[in-house]
Image (cartoon, rainbow, N blue to C red):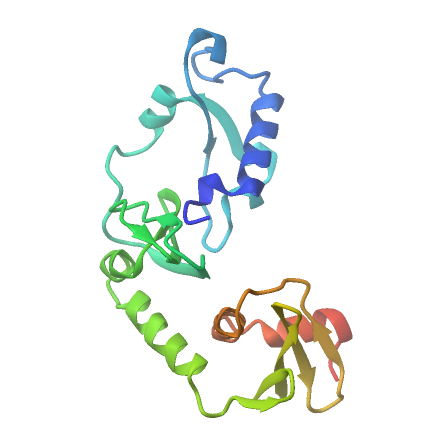
Length: 222
């Protein structure tokens, strides 16, 4: 998933938009039977919204040539903002700016371009603020922090008003977050191949300040 436009959610969304437009470019009317590649164009972009999270009326089907006419030919090199991070676990991704193989993907947004997934160096270059290398350094420090404790098959850390646990279940790892104030618990649905993968995910959630929002959604204010 180093490329957002290979993500299963995008493929499903794209195919649905093309079906809604009767399988043809809304500009020139060409179809796949005319030996053109059909793509989905966003009529606008919003920060922190993934490509498949737009309303249907904000998207339209264009052939590759008509789509290119809607955008600059070259990716902009300024004005990108940090959107999110993903650890693929191995070099299975590719940077959408320089095409280098990458494991750590930084998703960037731009006012005039679709979101892209890039590596650490390109993240620093495009955002202009060392966001990628800073994020990587802080993530490594968090994963190796001596504040992580072990209790049987559980590793845990206390951060603010929460206790965050990584629980070993067979050969996988799960995450739970516990409120120290009211002892309510949220258990994640995802599993991770190693505890470090789980720690990376915890760091991302904390860095994006999403823990409070999760508890408010599930339990209200406690």
